[in-house]
Amino acid sequence: MKTRRSGTVAVVVASLSNPLYPLLLQLLVEQLATRGFRTTVWELDGGMDDATVRALAESATDGVIFAAALDESKELLSRVAAEKPIILINRSVGTNLFDTIVSDNYAGGRRVAEYFLASGRRNIGLISAKSSKSSRASTIRERERGFMDGLGPVAQSPAFTRADAADFGYDFGFRAMQSLLSDRPEIDSVFCTNDIVAIGVLDAAKRCGRRVPEEMWVVGYDDIPMSRWECIGLTTVQQPLPSMVEQVVERLERRMADPKITPQTFILPNDLVLRRTTS
Image 1: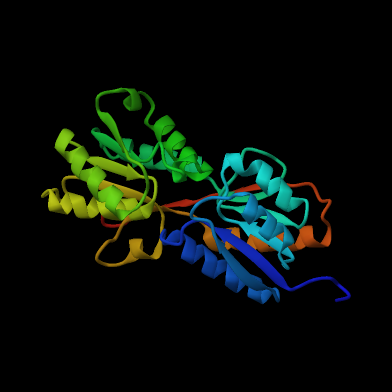
Image 2: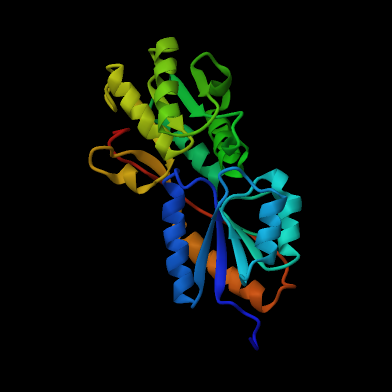
């Protein structure tokens, strides 16, 4: 009561159906526990609204970690930040108003493109989503932008194609790959902007009789635990989640101690992890 602290931090995530978020949540809970904090979890599958903002601002928490934020959330985030310390992880919202910890999604996407070209891949595909809520996230936009820039002139040539649909997920990846192979049977490499889509792509390729990696390469993004399973062996871009989480918790503690410190954005490097789907 003297410190007016509850010892609790709220963690706001997008849909837990994406395996990335349970992994990120587990790391956050563990890291917060080492600092003496309990964790409450808020799942915003439908996005932020006024009711959510009021509930977060009035909640008995010492701070809020947002792992789900979009550019259009800036005003709502500002209202929460007026009441308690907040920090963003794995998402940026195009402003310097909030502390933000992300990995270099642009560099990750670009590295995949350069890997394809250096390895002689010439009929290249991108599977993502332009119109979904998830596609408006900074992570997806930056991965796509880096990949397209890395392809250079190839991105504007008939050798390149992309498939988009309403949302991300295994089923979307499966259907998108079936469609892509129907239109472009000569495709020899596909970059997917998250791993669960890439796993759907792998199963669709198998259904269509395409051998991976002999006839077609597949690369995902995030390095979720399923990507490392022996039956999958997905080549993917690995985000440094443990380092990101550690830095987020340290920065949140600093902001709790001094709410007036200048917000900063920290961009951490990532790695391309080569597995069976490309070699």
